[in-house]
Length: 204
Image (cartoon, helix red, strand yellow):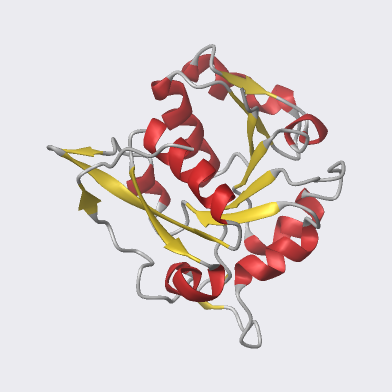
């Protein structure tokens, strides 16, 4: 079974860890302040969420990056060789305090993230919803809140989509980063869109 970790314990990281706990899926969570700073969070969420060091989290089979976009390079600095492991890019390239898209000279933010994790299979997901909405129950009546997924490795896309489904969301795979990922990038058509869809069954 794949090991899963979340790097970053801000609003997005906490929202994700809450869903893993609710679904009964083991996950590590780490931040730069160290495992002791996460004691209250892990106590609240129960046995399925374990505080870890950054080095431990970065060695997982599937690593969720839930840090600010400018912090990605430093956050992954201690990672061992990626060797095809999956990185889920939940970041948004935006300039504060006005929340405007960062100037990336026409490049996709996820491709820039991929350059910091050479050898990883990078998938964009969990970035289009505000943290407060992401933290809510994904069930919307007989539908599920949508999580969009895109990446340049088809197998990785569906591996992440399977995790999305296990967490109770409805995954919609959009294809390559330069295609569907462009819609997910901050300022794209799908950012801040809270949508619901009947869940589908995915097999990996």
